[in-house]
Length: 358
Image (tube, rainbow, N blue to C red; front, side, top):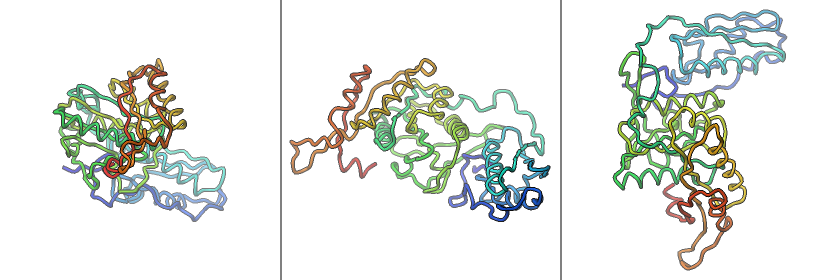
């Protein structure tokens, strides 16, 4: 069953658009000359990302607009409390007005519930129900992008499945979700089902014996998800906790590069045991990995680091199999692992077939 009105719900492909060109009509108009209709014209450019390109004006979500001096107040009406897109739409509304109105315009966006929804029964709020049957949750992390973290995560998931384990992978790299491309599942649309009032689940895509879930399944190919930290954190938490994973031995979480809000939120909200860290031998990558190690060992996070994988460790030409060329430096990952007492789980050479498969 396909459900609408939800940031992570499946929609027909090609019907999701996250932004439009800003309203261009009133950039130089004095605030005293602005009218409510001018504001409504601006708000016609705010698109609801889960309602097939319709603006909040078309959806009847703008309850009221008022102008008092240099202050614009907009009230948005939502059909239910705790709408998962409230923060996104409030932020988009405010940003659109600020971008298009004269300098110095103060903007306040309020929200109301248009129709009070029936109270939910106890125990149906989003929680940990869908991951209660997952034995081990492990993050695949890197301090720096472009080191092959997702390639390692996908190959590890498939390798574990071939060993007979039940495996799932959640692609939490919200700004560059690559799992759909790597697994040949681009264009797949996960199904969603309402299993009780106020309780919905999403079913993962299954291929190669692994259950896959990615933010990339819910946006058009090539579409950038322009989300601030809190919005991305909430969407990822929802994606992971609302998926019907079933019984799993391992749930791998392909984390975004860096050490920011998303990482802290995932570690605090998801019962993650620890992380595997991927790096290359380059000094710049190792510098960022060091920050990642310190983040996981911070007393407020305190998660185990299971080991370090050094990717792109060397290159061996097919015609010279006895030669190793250390293009990005030699043993940088090994030295980092030794420095912090982390197991070095492996060194992966540059291999054309890995590049083609990834």
